[in-house]
Length: 178
Image (cartoon, rainbow, N blue to C red; front, top):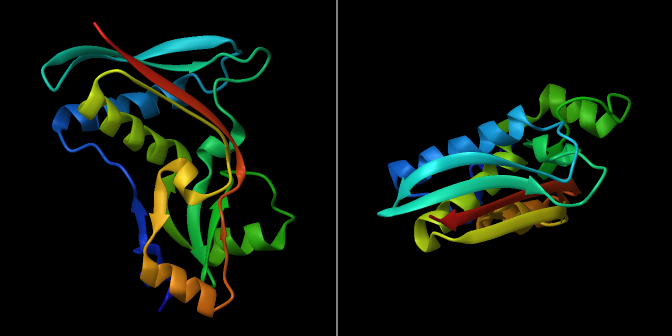
């Protein structure tokens, strides 16, 4: 299996199914990107509208004092290199050979942690209306709404690859039914 084929084995656990849900997903990502450096405690309205026939308000938040709205790993991207799935920071760590190689030679999936988490939040809002999701430290793909297929896991194991998506994410999203 090539690294490109392995990249296709990375799947979202939850995804929005409706146009409204996809709009909520985009709004969550935009709010996180726009306010990423806001000092906490803070909360920002990401979306106000209807989903599944209910009026909802969706907010991004960080309740802990003296930190930013989101952690640095929220902007990590998933890259596949040499039968390994890696979470790579958007910038920095250029002296680490693995990061440098992944940026130069790795297969980019186009998945950032915050988009994967936004998909989970939007799917839950579609289903339940009211919900809260808070991801602090990512250790496993499931922490950021990702899974690797059985075929992918077997391939990674057979090639002594690894799945490393660790990092301080600190993304909070909650919704209320109005």
